Image (cartoon, rainbow, N blue to C red; front, side, top):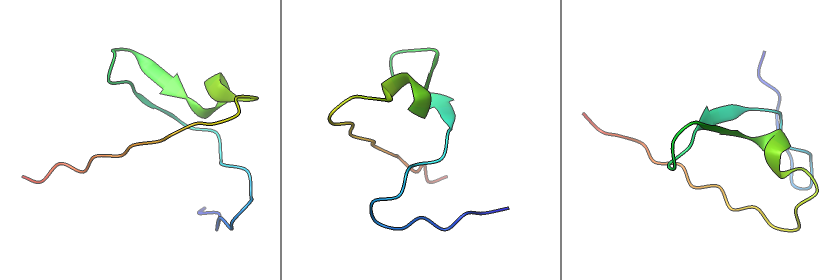
Length: 44
């Protein structure tokens, strides 16, 4: 099921590979004033 996001809505909980090794998730940054997400799409 895909949930539609709107401006100001809370991001769904997710975990992804970190550029510094291991994983990072949205819950790890809960309560932080600013969070920047950077997604890279690899082309084959």
